[in-house]
Length: 242
Image (cartoon, rainbow, N blue to C red; front, side, top):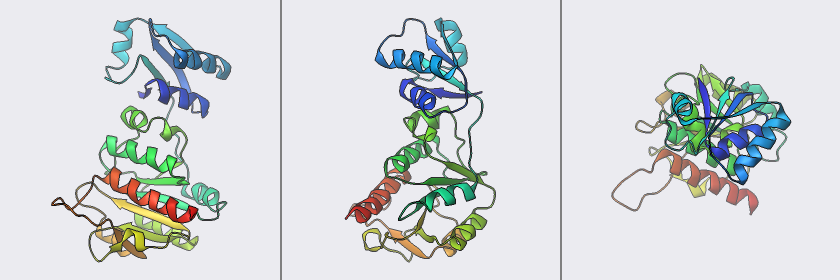
């Protein structure tokens, strides 16, 4: 069962037209967001029921449900070509590729940052990656309902397709890389970040046109992947707005 969990994520899912089957509200919940969920559900023709605690707990015991969940029909994934076509409408397209991100909280946080920084679409791997589940939707604060996500079997093939469409492949790596602020991002960019522990796979790194890193001043030599992704994406945004 694919759930959207939390007041804001459910409202975002409703507003973005996600295929929701049913909205459930824990009995006794009140407030402006709850009212907005009820009104929007009615407008969209989606059932919205108030249910008692035992039934609500049978659906989810997520600690951050805030008394609201929605049942999703399925996660909508886009074709890579769809994301590329949409990105090309921008002056400087920006697509984010996630090479085997396995933690759901990291994936959700990255999707939230990607949506806030103007990423045109996110590519994930079908295997060895976190599923886009209720935790991801909740952690993304609803961003997963707005940003286009593509799931691919062959990551290297996806990179080749991006290259054929004029994208420069920029990978985040500690090896043989330059300071991320020295890279020019006023080009069509496909940014790759790698697995939480191992980073990018070797074949992925070999396909990159440029490798960048975030210099570390402390004793720990790496940032959490979602934090590092945010640092780089907002440097891209800063350069493009200057």
